[in-house]
Image (cartoon, rainbow, N blue to C red; front, side, top):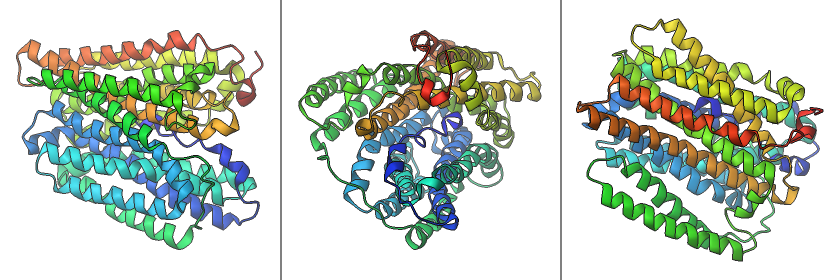
Amino acid sequence: MSADVGDGLAPGVEAIAAAPTGGSAHGYRVTALVVASALFMQQLDGTVLTVALPTMAHDLGRPATSLSLALTSYLLALALFIPASGTLADRLESRSIFCAAIGIFLIGSVACAQATSLPMLVVARFVQGIGGAMMVPVGRLVLLRSVAREDMVRALSWLVMPALAGPILGPPLGGFIVTWLDWRWIFYLNLPIGILGMVGAWLLVPEVRGDARARFDLSGFFLSGAALGCLLFGLELASRPGTGRVAIALLVVGAVFAVLYIRHARRVSDPILDPSLMRIPTFRLSVIAGSLTRITQGAQPFLLPLIFQIGFGLSAARTGTITMAGAVGALAMKTLAPRVLRRWGFRRSLIVSGVASSAGYAVCAFFRPDWPTAAIIVVLGVAGFFTSFQFTGYNAVAYADIDKERMSAATSFYATFQQLTLSLGICIAATVLELGTLAEGQGGPGLRTFSLAFLTVAAISLSAVVWNRRFDAAAGAEMSGHRP
């Protein structure tokens, strides 16, 4: 998920207009770094964990593919609670909510480290996700509301850079911990970072509160939560042997709740997830195409450590040093994206990058133990570069035609679908691996099964190009500076 690290940082810029006009350089740097500690911790936790999945599965006595539940439960919690985070920050003091969110994340981390079974780990990861859902969005609002307008761009740069370091440091650090220590230290690692963040926020960050104009959509929160939870876990269980009836029941119940939520959203003025936003062409196309791309990106951090450790027999440490290539490629893209978009515009750039990133991940299907490590690193770096470029483009053009009054609603809707489709990517990859393992009659997935999984998700990502072609040539021109 490292290529998607910038997601959720750009939305919320409407609060810049409300930011204070005074302040010192020291003040914005301190505030940005305190908030960045939470984002760094979240990114580090996610990327460290993926490398450790095979070892954790062996220790818990479960197949490696079953650990996908631990990943999807976290992402599901993000999807469910991100829409509520903005309202909580408006109604209560943002700094207090930010510190509480870090505390919940740390409680979940300790529970993960103490887990002795897969169900315990899944529940603990869900608790972690509740904290993560509030931690980063609320932290971003704290920054936007407490930093002077003239310092905003520099403050956001200070916020993003530590977050980009997490996906680069995470894989090799995870490999080191699993190889020479114990996987439980992955979660204990969050404690010093989180405690420093809480203390720093309480002592150094000002208390700010927004305008709670809209009523919190409690009914919509429960209806959408039931729909998303049942649908996602129904898809997850569909890949498990002997759970077909439960999976079908969950999917049916989830579909019923989804219909009920849509009917509810049409009757209220401020639904927690506003489906009417999909009538805006640039937003709709960005959500659909971005979701297809994120399915692939959600699957890659799950598939790559498994093929390297189970398929190739590599150590966790070596796996970590290889998989960090995607994050390095994503980081290399950040400085080039504005110039590319200015020269070619959103439509053409997204089409080309969509084909390139899908081709890069399709090549992963042909990885074999005799491949040179350098060649694998180059493929992952190039794929990470183009995938990160796509997310940068989608994150920007999605808000090109959103009114200021609807920016908050659009942010919640978009962020929710980001997390859901990442979860869906893990579900699809796990399903292909499970079915392939059953077909091969082996104790675990073979290289051909891994190849099928990579090709499946790469084909889904490639289908986003169909939607990219539907963008108007002038879409987002004011943002990119492109003259069609």
